Amino acid sequence: MKKKLLGALLVGGLAASLVGCSGGGTGASGASGTSGKTLEVWDMQQSSKDINAAYAPLVKKFESDNPGTTVKVTAFPYEQYRDKVLVAMKGGTGPDVLALDQVWMAEFAAGGLISPLDDQLASSKAIKQSDFFTGAWASNQYQGKTYGVPLNADVWEQMYYNADMFRAAGLNPDAPPTTWDGWKQAADKLTKAPDQFGMSLIGCKGETSVVLTDSLLFSNGGKVVDGDHAAFNSPEDVQALDQYKKLAADAPAGTSGTCEQDAVGRFTSGKAAMLLDGSWQQDTMKTAAKFDWRIAVPPAPDGKKFVGALGGFNLAMNAKTKSSDLAFKWMEFMSQPDNQTAVNSLIPALKDVGTKFVQANRKQPDVVLNTLNGGAPRPLSPAYPAISTAEQNAIQAIIGGKSATDAAKDANTAIDQALQDLK
Image (cartoon, rainbow, N blue to C red):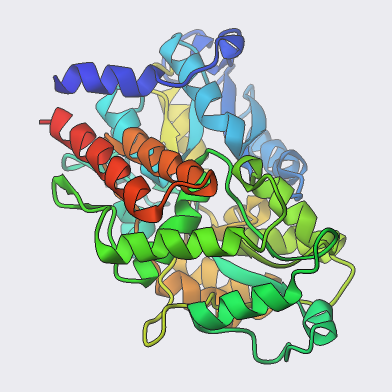
C-alpha cells in the first residue's frame, strides 16, 4: 500500500503538456569527476528579483574554479516548479542539483528521486549542520538520513499594509490591527468597492494558500496532523478557516483564482490595503509600491500570539546524476555566505548570514525576525502532497460558500486516509 501511495503522489497532478520538459545534467557522460561536465541546476523564482542574473557571476566563478565545467541554471515560478521537476525526474532526466521546498523532501526521498548525502557531508569542511537554522536543517531528514542542504529559510508571513490608505480611512498607520476582530473591522473600513478593498488575499489552489491558512490555524492553536492521524477539524482549525472566509469578504472577487503574484499586484497597484506574504516580497515592494508601505506581525486571536508557517528551499541531488562529485561541490559552493546572500530573496539558511541579511536588506527587520523565530513547520511527511491537496480543497470550498465546519471535516477525512495509506 505504501509503495502504491508514493507512486501516486509522485505522478499525481502532472500536466501532459509538461512531458517534454527535461534538463541535460543527468545525461552528462563519464564518471563522477569534475572535468568536462555540464552541471544542470534548477531553482525557484522567489520574487521580482532576477534569480538567473543573480546566479551569473557565481556560475562564472564556479566554472573558473572547475576548468572544463559548464553550469546551466534555470529558475521557474513556484506554481510551475514541482510539476516540471517531477515530470523530468520521473522520465530519467532533470537537473543534477535542484532546489526543493522543505515539504517535498520526504516525498522525493521516499520515491528514490534524490540521493542521501551523509557520506559527503561527513567529510565536508564547507558544510556544518551547526551553521544553519535548526528548522531548516531538520527539514532534510528522512528515515535517519540527510537528503539536502538548506539554501534558504523563511516564514509565512508578515502583514503588508498601505499606510496612506490607513490614514485616508481614519485608521492609525502606526497602530495596525493586532487581533482578528480588529483586523476584520479595519478591513471593512478600508473596503470601498468596486475600486478599493481591505485585503488582497491569496486563494488559488496551490501551496501558497495552504501556508497562509496554516499560519491562521497555528496562531489559533490548531494543527494539521497529530502524529500519524489527521487533526484538521478541531474547533481551533474551524475558527481559523472561518477567519479566512471573513477576510475573503473584504478581498476582490475571484479569490479562488488569486495566486501570489496576483495578490501582490493588487497591493502594489493600490487596489488593496493589506496583504499577507513573506519577506521576500520586499524586493518587489521596493520597486513596485509607490506609496508608504509597511509591515507588521499579522494579527492573532485575542490573547494569543501569531505563529507563522515555516518554509524554505533545500538543495538536493538527483539520484540519477552522473556528476555526483561536481553536484556536491556546487552545494558546498552555495553554502558559502556571500553566495547564499547573492541568490536569495528568501532569508539565507546560514544562521549568521540570514540574520545579517535581514538586518541589511529588509525594512523593519525586527518584524521579520520575530515572525521567523516564532514559526512552526508544516507536516514533514511523504504524504504531504495529499495533505496539501486536502487543505487546498478546503480553502476552495469555503471561498465557494461551504461552511468552515464542513470543509474542515471533509479535509480531515482525506488527510487521515492519506496518512493511513502510508502504513
